[in-house]
Length: 143
Image 1 (cartoon, rainbow, N blue to C red):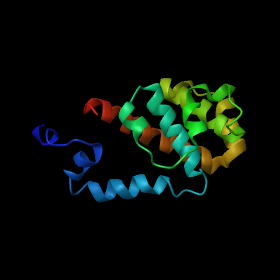
Image 2 (cartoon, rainbow, N blue to C red; image 1 turned 120 degrees about the horizontal axis):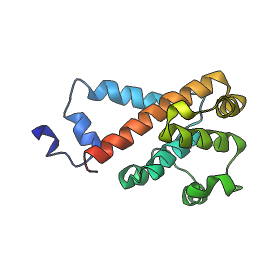
Image 3 (cartoon, one colour; image 1 turned 135 degrees about the vertical axis):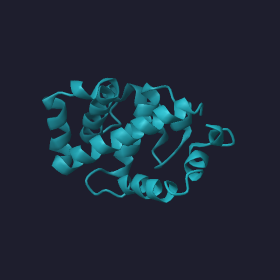
């Protein structure tokens, strides 16, 4: 796959596929505009995926600005008072998703649904699939 060799970023690789790039960008950007899952909440989950998989490349990327306190205490989110109940429910869901999506319990899904509704749960699941995939691809490509 020699077309990877000149790429220094994930975006460089996506741009090498001109038929994919605009569609992928529109798809990715759509998650940050959902009314059912606030962008700041999705950013916390995206960052937690990066932390769990030790992806410095994804961790350094900032999609949505978060407070320094939230970023710095993310690895200890369950013990921190800076996170809302909705954020904690989604971060708990994210952690299990990253280990084994089939291990997500009904109680964990209900906790997210009680905070975000059915549409929010679906949005979170779809976003996590994208974040997980992007993190793993970043690692595969050596970023």
